[in-house]
Image (cartoon, rainbow, N blue to C red; front, side):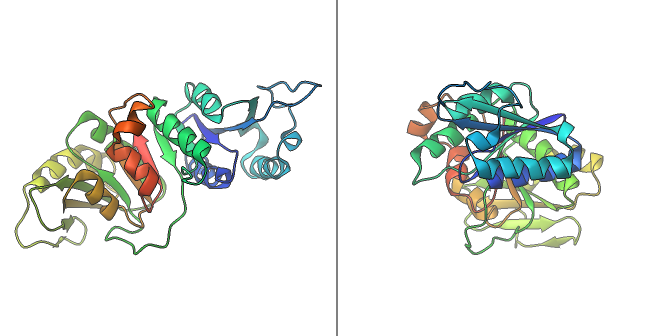
Amino acid sequence: MRSIVVGAGGASGPLALAWALADARATGADLVLCHAHPPVPAPAVDAGSDSAPAGLHDPALARLVADIRAGLGGHRVTLRLAPGNPGDLILTEAGHADLVVVGPPGRSAPGRRETTHRVVAHATVPVVVARSRTGAAPGPFAGHVVVGVDGSAPSRAALEFGFREAALHHRPLAAVHVTADRREDYWFDDVMLSAHFAAEPAGLDLLAGETERLHHQRPDVAVKRAVFAGRPADGLLRAGAGAALLCLGDRGRSWPARALLGSVTDRAVDCADAPVAVVR
Protein backbone atom coordinates (compact mmCIF):
# COMPACT_ATOMS: atom_id res chain seq x y z
CA MET A 1 0.00 0.00 0.00
CA ARG A 2 1.03 3.58 -0.63
CA SER A 3 -1.10 5.42 1.91
CA ILE A 4 -3.59 4.83 4.71
CA VAL A 5 -6.11 7.49 5.74
CA VAL A 6 -7.07 7.48 9.42
CA GLY A 7 -9.90 9.18 11.26
CA ALA A 8 -7.71 10.34 14.14
CA GLY A 9 -10.11 12.51 16.11
CA GLY A 10 -12.53 11.78 18.91
CA ALA A 11 -12.59 9.13 21.59
CA SER A 12 -12.17 6.31 19.08
CA GLY A 13 -9.22 7.93 17.30
CA PRO A 14 -6.54 5.98 19.23
CA LEU A 15 -8.14 2.65 18.18
CA ALA A 16 -8.06 3.65 14.52
CA LEU A 17 -4.51 4.97 14.82
CA ALA A 18 -3.23 1.77 16.43
CA TRP A 19 -4.72 -0.37 13.64
CA ALA A 20 -3.42 1.89 10.87
CA LEU A 21 0.03 2.09 12.42
CA ALA A 22 0.34 -1.71 12.50
CA ASP A 23 -0.57 -1.93 8.81
CA ALA A 24 1.75 0.95 7.92
CA ARG A 25 4.67 -0.81 9.60
CA ALA A 26 3.88 -4.06 7.80
CA THR A 27 3.37 -2.53 4.34
CA GLY A 28 5.58 0.57 4.31
CA ALA A 29 2.54 2.78 3.65
CA ASP A 30 2.40 6.45 4.61
CA LEU A 31 -0.23 7.64 7.10
CA VAL A 32 -2.62 10.54 6.55
CA LEU A 33 -4.20 11.50 9.87
CA CYS A 34 -7.52 13.35 9.56
CA HIS A 35 -8.93 15.49 12.35
CA ALA A 36 -11.97 17.73 11.97
CA HIS A 37 -12.42 20.49 14.53
CA PRO A 38 -14.86 23.29 15.30
CA PRO A 39 -14.17 26.59 13.50
CA VAL A 40 -11.51 28.64 15.31
CA PRO A 41 -11.29 32.42 15.57
CA ALA A 42 -8.63 34.48 13.83
CA PRO A 43 -5.77 34.10 13.19
CA ALA A 44 -7.08 31.55 10.73
CA VAL A 45 -5.58 28.08 10.57
CA ASP A 46 -4.46 26.72 7.20
CA ALA A 47 -6.84 23.75 7.25
CA GLY A 48 -4.93 21.48 4.91
CA SER A 49 -1.46 22.25 6.21
CA ASP A 50 0.86 20.32 8.46
CA SER A 51 1.94 23.65 9.91
CA ALA A 52 -1.41 23.98 11.67
CA PRO A 53 -0.66 23.07 15.31
CA ALA A 54 -2.74 20.08 16.35
CA GLY A 55 -2.40 21.19 19.94
CA LEU A 56 -4.53 24.23 19.11
CA HIS A 57 -7.51 21.87 18.87
CA ASP A 58 -6.54 18.71 20.76
CA PRO A 59 -3.37 18.55 22.90
CA ALA A 60 -3.73 14.77 23.34
CA LEU A 61 -3.83 14.35 19.55
CA ALA A 62 -0.73 16.52 19.19
CA ARG A 63 1.20 14.27 21.57
CA LEU A 64 -0.07 11.15 19.78
CA VAL A 65 0.95 12.48 16.37
CA ALA A 66 4.40 13.35 17.71
CA ASP A 67 4.82 9.80 19.06
CA ILE A 68 3.72 8.26 15.74
CA ARG A 69 6.12 10.45 13.78
CA ALA A 70 8.95 9.54 16.10
CA GLY A 71 8.29 5.82 15.65
CA LEU A 72 7.36 5.69 11.96
CA GLY A 73 9.37 8.60 10.58
CA GLY A 74 8.10 12.14 10.22
CA HIS A 75 8.23 12.03 6.41
CA ARG A 76 5.66 9.20 6.41
CA VAL A 77 3.03 10.95 8.55
CA THR A 78 0.82 13.79 7.33
CA LEU A 79 -1.73 15.57 9.51
CA ARG A 80 -4.85 16.99 7.87
CA LEU A 81 -6.82 19.47 9.99
CA ALA A 82 -10.06 21.04 8.82
CA PRO A 83 -13.11 22.63 10.41
CA GLY A 84 -16.44 20.94 9.92
CA ASN A 85 -17.63 17.40 9.28
CA PRO A 86 -15.07 14.61 9.85
CA GLY A 87 -16.75 12.39 7.24
CA ASP A 88 -16.19 15.01 4.54
CA LEU A 89 -12.50 15.30 5.40
CA ILE A 90 -11.93 11.53 5.53
CA LEU A 91 -13.74 10.89 2.24
CA THR A 92 -11.82 13.67 0.51
CA GLU A 93 -8.50 12.18 1.56
CA ALA A 94 -9.72 8.63 0.81
CA GLY A 95 -9.80 9.49 -2.88
CA HIS A 96 -5.99 9.32 -2.90
CA ALA A 97 -5.51 6.38 -0.51
CA ASP A 98 -5.42 2.57 -0.55
CA LEU A 99 -7.14 2.02 2.82
CA VAL A 100 -9.25 4.00 5.28
CA VAL A 101 -9.33 3.25 9.01
CA VAL A 102 -11.97 4.72 11.32
CA GLY A 103 -13.15 4.08 14.85
CA PRO A 104 -16.32 2.18 15.75
CA PRO A 105 -19.74 3.84 15.62
CA GLY A 106 -20.92 5.09 18.98
CA ARG A 107 -24.52 4.34 19.84
CA SER A 108 -24.38 7.07 22.47
CA ALA A 109 -22.67 9.44 20.03
CA PRO A 110 -24.92 9.88 16.95
CA GLY A 111 -22.38 12.04 15.12
CA ARG A 112 -19.68 9.40 15.37
CA ARG A 113 -22.10 6.68 14.26
CA GLU A 114 -23.12 8.69 11.20
CA THR A 115 -19.49 9.42 10.32
CA THR A 116 -18.47 5.75 10.46
CA HIS A 117 -21.42 4.52 8.41
CA ARG A 118 -21.09 7.35 5.90
CA VAL A 119 -17.43 6.58 5.30
CA VAL A 120 -18.22 2.86 4.94
CA ALA A 121 -21.01 3.65 2.46
CA HIS A 122 -19.11 6.11 0.27
CA ALA A 123 -15.40 5.24 0.33
CA THR A 124 -14.25 3.53 -2.86
CA VAL A 125 -11.33 1.82 -1.10
CA PRO A 126 -11.47 -0.76 1.73
CA VAL A 127 -12.52 0.63 5.11
CA VAL A 128 -11.47 -0.94 8.41
CA VAL A 129 -13.63 -0.14 11.42
CA ALA A 130 -11.23 -0.68 14.31
CA ARG A 131 -12.65 -1.68 17.67
CA SER A 132 -11.69 -3.39 20.89
CA ARG A 133 -13.16 -6.69 22.08
CA THR A 134 -16.46 -6.47 23.97
CA GLY A 135 -15.66 -9.40 26.24
CA ALA A 136 -18.23 -11.70 24.64
CA ALA A 137 -17.44 -15.40 24.36
CA PRO A 138 -15.07 -16.00 21.42
CA GLY A 139 -16.21 -18.02 18.42
CA PRO A 140 -14.39 -20.93 16.77
CA PHE A 141 -12.14 -18.57 14.80
CA ALA A 142 -10.87 -16.28 17.54
CA GLY A 143 -7.65 -14.60 16.40
CA HIS A 144 -8.29 -15.47 12.73
CA VAL A 145 -8.99 -13.26 9.76
CA VAL A 146 -12.59 -14.25 8.96
CA VAL A 147 -13.99 -13.56 5.49
CA GLY A 148 -17.61 -13.80 4.38
CA VAL A 149 -17.76 -15.64 1.03
CA ASP A 150 -20.80 -15.94 -1.24
CA GLY A 151 -19.24 -16.18 -4.71
CA SER A 152 -19.94 -12.54 -5.63
CA ALA A 153 -17.41 -10.00 -6.89
CA PRO A 154 -17.50 -8.02 -3.61
CA SER A 155 -16.84 -11.16 -1.55
CA ARG A 156 -13.90 -12.03 -3.82
CA ALA A 157 -12.48 -8.57 -3.18
CA ALA A 158 -12.96 -9.14 0.56
CA LEU A 159 -11.26 -12.52 0.29
CA GLU A 160 -8.25 -11.00 -1.46
CA PHE A 161 -8.03 -8.29 1.20
CA GLY A 162 -8.36 -10.92 3.94
CA PHE A 163 -5.55 -13.06 2.54
CA ARG A 164 -3.30 -10.02 2.39
CA GLU A 165 -4.05 -9.08 6.00
CA ALA A 166 -3.57 -12.66 7.17
CA ALA A 167 -0.20 -12.87 5.41
CA LEU A 168 0.94 -9.46 6.70
CA HIS A 169 0.16 -10.27 10.33
CA HIS A 170 0.84 -14.03 10.24
CA ARG A 171 -2.70 -15.07 11.11
CA PRO A 172 -4.83 -18.00 9.93
CA LEU A 173 -7.78 -17.27 7.65
CA ALA A 174 -11.31 -18.68 7.90
CA ALA A 175 -13.48 -18.45 4.76
CA VAL A 176 -17.13 -18.59 5.86
CA HIS A 177 -20.23 -19.18 3.75
CA VAL A 178 -23.61 -18.73 5.43
CA THR A 179 -26.69 -20.58 4.23
CA ALA A 180 -30.22 -21.07 5.50
CA ASP A 181 -30.17 -24.66 4.18
CA ARG A 182 -28.31 -25.89 7.27
CA ARG A 183 -29.21 -26.05 10.93
CA GLU A 184 -25.67 -26.43 12.29
CA ASP A 185 -22.26 -24.86 11.67
CA TYR A 186 -19.48 -26.83 9.94
CA TRP A 187 -15.83 -26.16 9.26
CA PHE A 188 -12.79 -27.85 7.77
CA ASP A 189 -9.16 -27.18 8.72
CA ASP A 190 -6.83 -27.48 5.71
CA VAL A 191 -3.73 -27.67 7.91
CA MET A 192 -4.89 -30.21 10.47
CA LEU A 193 -7.06 -32.00 7.88
CA SER A 194 -9.73 -32.17 10.56
CA ALA A 195 -13.44 -31.95 9.84
CA HIS A 196 -16.09 -30.64 12.19
CA PHE A 197 -19.24 -31.98 10.56
CA ALA A 198 -21.02 -35.28 10.08
CA ALA A 199 -21.76 -34.87 6.35
CA GLU A 200 -19.91 -32.52 4.03
CA PRO A 201 -22.10 -29.48 3.26
CA ALA A 202 -22.44 -28.33 -0.34
CA GLY A 203 -21.10 -24.85 0.48
CA LEU A 204 -17.59 -26.25 0.95
CA ASP A 205 -17.29 -26.69 -2.82
CA LEU A 206 -17.97 -22.98 -3.28
CA LEU A 207 -15.39 -22.09 -0.64
CA ALA A 208 -12.77 -24.39 -2.14
CA GLY A 209 -13.20 -22.79 -5.56
CA GLU A 210 -13.11 -19.25 -4.21
CA THR A 211 -10.01 -19.73 -2.02
CA GLU A 212 -7.91 -21.96 -4.30
CA ARG A 213 -6.17 -19.26 -6.37
CA LEU A 214 -5.42 -16.96 -3.44
CA HIS A 215 -4.22 -19.82 -1.25
CA HIS A 216 -1.89 -20.89 -4.04
CA GLN A 217 -0.48 -17.35 -4.14
CA ARG A 218 -0.09 -17.23 -0.35
CA PRO A 219 0.62 -20.82 0.76
CA ASP A 220 1.95 -19.55 4.09
CA VAL A 221 -1.59 -18.59 5.19
CA ALA A 222 -3.34 -21.40 7.06
CA VAL A 223 -6.90 -21.71 5.74
CA LYS A 224 -10.10 -23.03 7.27
CA ARG A 225 -13.35 -23.31 5.33
CA ALA A 226 -16.68 -23.12 7.12
CA VAL A 227 -20.37 -23.29 6.30
CA PHE A 228 -22.51 -21.59 8.94
CA ALA A 229 -26.26 -21.87 9.31
CA GLY A 230 -28.85 -19.10 9.40
CA ARG A 231 -29.15 -15.60 8.02
CA PRO A 232 -25.96 -14.03 6.60
CA ALA A 233 -25.55 -11.36 9.27
CA ASP A 234 -26.22 -13.76 12.16
CA GLY A 235 -23.85 -16.42 10.84
CA LEU A 236 -21.04 -13.98 10.10
CA LEU A 237 -21.32 -12.31 13.49
CA ARG A 238 -21.15 -15.73 15.12
CA ALA A 239 -18.15 -16.77 13.03
CA GLY A 240 -16.38 -13.46 13.63
CA ALA A 241 -16.71 -13.35 17.41
CA GLY A 242 -13.25 -12.65 18.78
CA ALA A 243 -11.64 -12.60 15.31
CA ALA A 244 -8.61 -10.48 14.56
CA LEU A 245 -10.57 -9.08 11.60
CA LEU A 246 -13.93 -9.77 9.93
CA CYS A 247 -13.79 -8.99 6.19
CA LEU A 248 -16.98 -8.41 4.21
CA GLY A 249 -17.66 -7.47 0.61
CA ASP A 250 -20.09 -4.64 0.02
CA ARG A 251 -22.16 -3.79 -3.06
CA GLY A 252 -22.65 -0.22 -1.91
CA ARG A 253 -25.74 1.85 -1.35
CA SER A 254 -26.20 5.54 -0.79
CA TRP A 255 -26.35 7.00 2.67
CA PRO A 256 -28.87 7.49 4.34
CA ALA A 257 -30.73 4.76 2.41
CA ARG A 258 -28.41 2.20 4.02
CA ALA A 259 -29.39 3.42 7.47
CA LEU A 260 -33.06 3.00 6.66
CA LEU A 261 -32.82 -0.36 4.90
CA GLY A 262 -29.90 -1.89 6.75
CA SER A 263 -27.35 -4.35 5.36
CA VAL A 264 -25.12 -7.19 6.45
CA THR A 265 -22.10 -4.90 6.48
CA ASP A 266 -23.85 -2.17 8.47
CA ARG A 267 -24.97 -4.68 11.09
CA ALA A 268 -21.44 -6.01 11.35
CA VAL A 269 -20.07 -2.47 11.70
CA ASP A 270 -22.51 -1.88 14.56
CA CYS A 271 -22.47 -5.23 16.33
CA ALA A 272 -19.41 -7.37 15.50
CA ASP A 273 -17.14 -8.43 18.35
CA ALA A 274 -14.12 -7.83 16.10
CA PRO A 275 -12.66 -5.14 13.85
CA VAL A 276 -14.51 -5.11 10.52
CA ALA A 277 -13.13 -4.53 7.02
CA VAL A 278 -15.66 -3.51 4.37
CA VAL A 279 -14.36 -4.01 0.84
CA ARG A 280 -16.12 -2.64 -2.23
